[in-house]
Length: 483
Image (cartoon, rainbow, N blue to C red; front, side):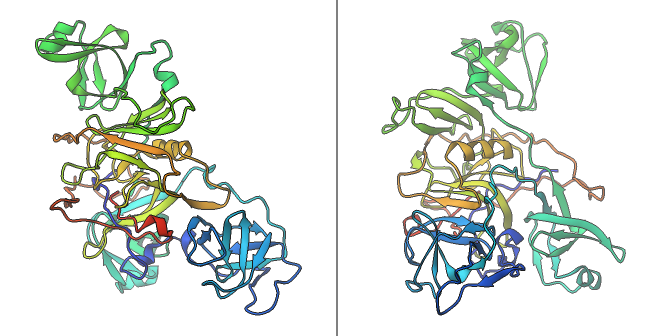
């Protein structure tokens, strides 16, 4: 099932309590057969054909440790192109991956085998199995330690992690994380990310160019035969399901109530819906060139993608709660990460592993990203980030740019990234409706109770959260995050 945990702010710095939860994909790996280390002295062997990062490694614009970081690569083979002498913050040779792309030799291995085409990590959907802790949960180094009760530490409730396996060991049901930790199965719950997704502008306007995108906000909404019936709540008609996608074809005010006409000639009270009304692009967007930009409507909790004036995609989101609002303004996407670990900083003991399709856009680390811990889209509920379903987060990740094959992240120069405009005001009311789904294993514990997460505040008399960005260029500061 899904649990109610929203945008918990700050990446932990390396070496803090939850650094051990960095996943296998980002951890240092054993040297694979057929590889050799970069020599400390002397030339690179002439038989070398490829370089392989030992784990996730920072890519620099120049062969200098303090030059701007332009991305992060995974542990896959890249063609050997050229080298630059050791120094400038790197004790071994620098290796070139392409124009303006350099890796420090201390972080790579060499191979005499040619590099195959690096895999496109974006082309393969994220298929991790996620879990969360239901209560304070002891963490063990092995299944044997779990049987014996020899715990390494205790994780807070609502901690998110990636599941490697679920099995019984000596009669004890354990869950193994992708980072190699073990937890008692009774203390955790598997989760399914939401299947919700938005719609394209082409589908929305297929036979009605002026149609507006809308979704049902309440648990069930009633549709009526006339605008008067809708305004007065008289009569009965087909019920509309929570988050059902609609098209608004006409708006009226009747008896001081706003009502809308949807497909099929039915009428619905506007208060039961989230409706997206396009607004002119912010200054600086080149409409003639069909420049891509993103619009976030706080009032309606909707996010839309545009090419110039053309609506390309629109969907529901969850932005910051009234206590930790997503600030209105015009931003640029600063960095794009296939997945990042996110969590509270000092003193809270909370982490969400591998938050998917993360795109940072401000100094305080707010980001667009997918969520696996709730599906309450259409309601403000985060700590400042812009929450999306997996499908929608992947769509916006592709919309804002490409990710080179074999790369896990790209970092952008100031003003280079896609424009993102946040407008309106955060609605004060919220709905308690939340879809619950089954756990992915047969050993699921009792349903997770709704959790009223501790609220944290943003600026102006509020606690300020920051998360540490493991690889950050000078122009990025550190990303304080509020997923």
